[in-house]
Every structure is written in structure tokens, then in C-alpha cells.
Image (cartoon, rainbow, N blue to C red; front, side, top):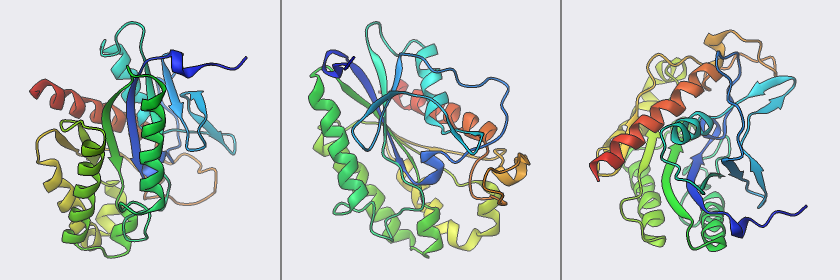
Length: 254
């Protein structure tokens, strides 16, 4: 049976950036995310699905939007009759420096089109936050502080201005510490730019101290690699909760 999503009303989260946003987290957790008909994905191919973890090579793979969504529902922010919709716009290994997220680039334009699509479905649909995790690619390409800050500032402003939501919360997070400490020189300009942008009103920066990489977690990686750049599943769960706490802090100030 075909479902008419124009009959649904959604609170909408934009999940954007690269692989730690898309979700490349493996390992065991004590309280696995349980899918619910209250939380949905809108995928880049225009399809809807109930939000859930996926399985890769017999290993569960997760992303931080799921525990953000769980806390959003548990907190009572999702009012009766509404559902939460996560726009899955992130793609691994992408940045500003390789022409994917600037205002004329493919992933940026696709993200904006996805937002337009879901807002057009129902006049009661509402954007709630832009959740961003990205920068490892730009660090590896030696992007400068000024260049990164210019483009991330423009991206935030464009989303807010295009959809007339000047107070739309923007939340970003630090890199995996395991990788960042090994790449301190190239990481510093990107993280400094993100911190400074997130010092602005209706923005927040999430710290990642204590959040292990897949390598540190020790769970057998499904691709047989030593992965120090991606959060493990336990860490990505915690990251989602930290993003939600940052979101709560923003909206309480408005």
C-alpha cells in the first residue's frame, strides 16, 4: 500500500556533512536503538523509511541522529499527532575543498532540494535543526581557517535565509580525538573555525572527549581495517545525546 506522506506532519532535522554524520559506527551497545513509527528518514533518492540502524557485512552500523531522535521523542518535544523526519543528506569523504558543499556544489544543492521537497508536502511541516558533522576531508586537503569559516557561515546563512528561519539551530561537533591528535596541525584550522562559528547565537559546538573511535573500541571492523577516524557505535550514541543536549540549550535561550 502506497503511503501518502502529505497527510503526515513532521518536525524536520537536517543531518548533513560527511561520514561521521552519515554514520560509520560499529560495535556493541547496552541499549540498542529501537525503531519507532514516530521517527522517519527521508533519503537522498526521495524515499521515506522508518529510521533504523543498518547492517553491513553482518555488523550493525549506526549514526548519531538516532539517539538524538530518541531523546527528542522521550523529552516530549514531539507533540501529539506529529512525527520526526531526518533528512539524510550526509555523504562520506566530502567537503568544501573538493567541491561538494559550497553553494553551487552538488551535495549542497541536493540538500536544499530535499528540504524544499519535504516542506512542500504539508504546510505544517517545520524545520527544527541543522545537525552538521564534517571537516576531516577539508583538514586533509589543508583548508585554511578563513576558507572553511567563510563557507560554513555561508551554508548556515543560506539555509536560514532561504527557508526564512533566522533562528534555526545549527549544531556541529569535534572530530574523533583518536584521529585528531594524530593530525593536530591540519585539524586545528577547521575545528577553530567551527568553534568560532558556533559561538554565534543559535549555534552550538559539541565536544567529543571520551568518545572512542572504531579502532579504540576493538570491535572487529566489517571491512577488516583499523579505523581511527570514525566514532564507534557506543560513541556515536553518546554523540547523538550530546547534540540533543546542545539543541535543548539553544531552544531554551529563545
